[in-house]
Length: 520
Image (cartoon, rainbow, N blue to C red; front, side, top):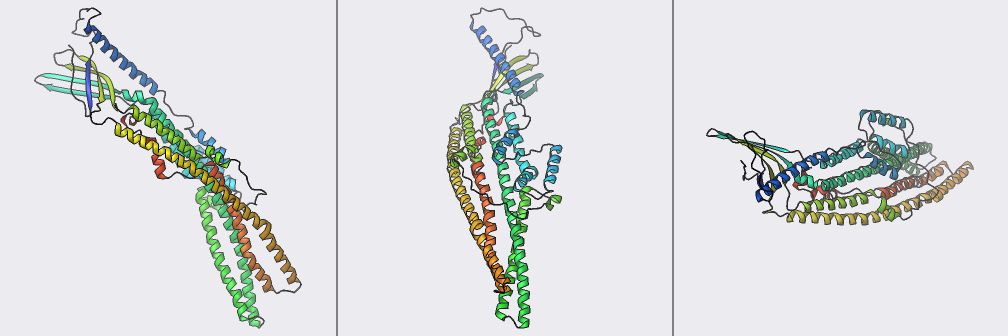
């Protein structure tokens, strides 16, 4: 006996049961008489049996393909290491085991035994900063999504039991996501794009952390150097104020001149307090940039900033280099490509968004068991997928325009960064070659005049007051140069971080929000 079930499945899907012949040797069944090969009934039964066989073969093939999706040995971090090392000359550290974390702490402790340098600060940040490790964990999330996209969704089992009037009817069925099998290659491409995007983002975060460490290092060293100088000025002001008080008491100094020295002492005290706070704040900023805590806080800084290079850097084809190497440009391009692939998946599943197929059998009291297969698909009666496709196309155009905007902004940022770099270099060189040597010669001349008893000690101290602005300007200009150099290299290698709105718009998951992709 053949059995057909025309019951509706869960809306909006329609379940179609197509019966197939029972096995000829099943209990209670006699083989049917052989019919001519040309009869329509025989052709229909052969076609149904062939369809069932093809569905079973497809399910087994899907299971075999799903077994091929696996995780990589390094979790995709090798690409991040290469991208970061090409741009900052340092290799990041992804600490996935306790042994790796212990080795990183030992290396940090070894580095902190000596006064920090800019390169050592970058290495400490890459080894010690917890925010980076959290960012690197995004790779594992993206790779898990990629592996899941290469695996077929778990089959579903349905069981039904009806009893009444002494009769018992039992339905059983196993369904597989056939549409997920057909769209698996495209869905995997979408997740592959997102995984590559996560790699670029991890490399960008590495470069950004290195730039933040270098900037904080130069800020902290400059603040410490200025604090030392303001301490010397304060000592000179205290000596001058004390000498003026004694000379007034002896009647050899006017009250007005004494108040000038006292005012200079008060200003020097305020400047020293401000410099001390700035040095503390800059050091704490460096602590955060390096992720230091506990015993690591006892690190030492050099006495002064590195010297100015003899010549400024002249990057060739800076804008073209930025277009080829900047990570934000690469991320924007990959996001647009991933969005295009997601758009293709949306179009492929525009009309049929749910398609399940599987084996079913039914047994009833007093009757032989019926076997067949079930197909469940969504009928596009009310939604033909036009809204979903239009949304996907709009998001794609949005990503395309954002990519172009990133490229335009990148070129502008490179030009601006190089102009700031050259200006900072020229100003620092001016202080080094003109202002500081001239102030030194003036001081030497005044010292000679003082030794010849041609000027008083207060004239010598007045010259020291005039030097304050020159010395502070020289230190600040040298600090600004090193920060501008760091920003120029970052502009060529990484660029500005993406905004939350642009990152959300570039996410291909916003396009591929259909049932076929969600199953992966």
